[in-house]
Image (cartoon, rainbow, N blue to C red):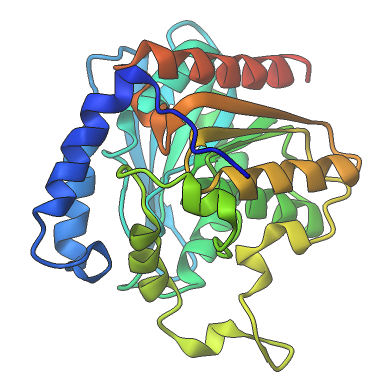
Length: 322
């Protein structure tokens, strides 16, 4: 029998605060309005301009069906710098450039890489596959234009947390299948790599910072159109939402970073094993005692920073070796 892992003491006050807040809601998490959930999410992950980098700028360019925005974090010093394309978390429903300002700034500072955060379209306003299309289009644009901003497109990585972890995995697959851009490394952080969360491990690894009730909220909007649940005539999730079922051979080296106190632990572990079986060089790193999205708080919690620094070191090594 699996035992429930212990949350790191540094995170217990935050866990208690969120649990109390959730208990005071007048409706279930899965039923609160999108605007209210977005506000709660933004308050929990504020921008952190105190984390200094060389330069921060926003750029817009034509996307598949709308104008896309990216925020470019350039390190101090002189380039050209390796480039990390970052996809934020938030269940494809929440989040944006500001909610993931802190981890992008810290990643830029720790790696010496240019970090480009992608502001892709969200559901329910923009149903799937809008975010899928935006994220690959952004990768292509960044690879083609990185030099204009002091980046080196020959040293290109993708990274993302939670929903952004799933996006990173899929962008790597799509780039392989479409013949580019060439990706040197993929960093998948607490990735939402499958929607089957019925295992005993998932049940036991629930904490207030991310509950299975929260997953119901996201899934309600992601899969609101029943037509996307059909694949070859069967009521099944599109392959995009279960990347482990892809042919994973020939993908770039990876680090899969999971949180021990997160119901997505198991799907991350399975994906790392599938990458390894496919001959992909992969490092599987467990954030012991860490809750979901702990990397967004790595600038506040020393226990989280330890693992974030290890992930950033893996990025630096991979891109330095190019």
